[in-house]
Image (tube, rainbow, N blue to C red; front, side, top):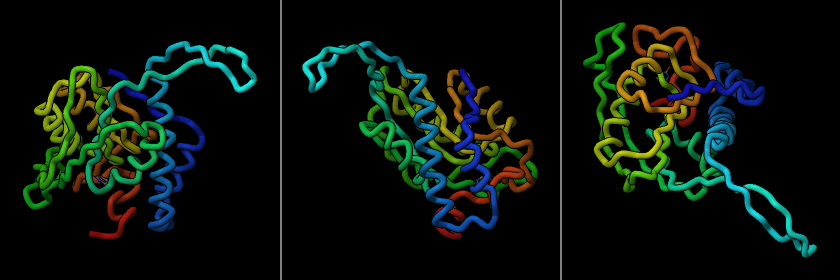
Length: 217
Ligand code: URA
């Protein structure tokens, strides 16, 4: 288990821009794409590297490194994760892709509770093997309800070698909740915010990530 908060100044400036209520839909979505890419570079640091020898066009042999990506499955939680996944795919272009359409049920939610019932309308996850690294992407890790439901679904498909969660903003409460159920998970975030409001929104947060990236639904 690791928790990595990405303090790269570019990641932090993107988070600031995303939080700003004046940021419009196009800039918001582009920001999430750039953040996904930056976070992908951070995640790639945790992959093993191997020394290799190559010959340059000048006929000279030189030593270098290659990153052993192995088998990667990226799972996006619709619809808010789509822009971050677009950025991540620049770093992991060979990844196989899964989608989970998940929605928190507001109608059964008790105000102030961390627990939401999760409605899943569509799940399509590629084969998961013992050597697969699974990345589950959701920009907002607010209560952990959606993430736990997604990880439960992943687990039904197979036991991956590694589970990596990629979130723009999370809360300590959600991180603790997810790690209680999935202590092996590695979590990457760009910020950990202090509060959740009674409707399950992160405070200060950035609002509804899906609505801001794609329009109010
Ligand atoms: N989902 C969002 O988009 N924003 C939050 O603050 C919480 C959940």
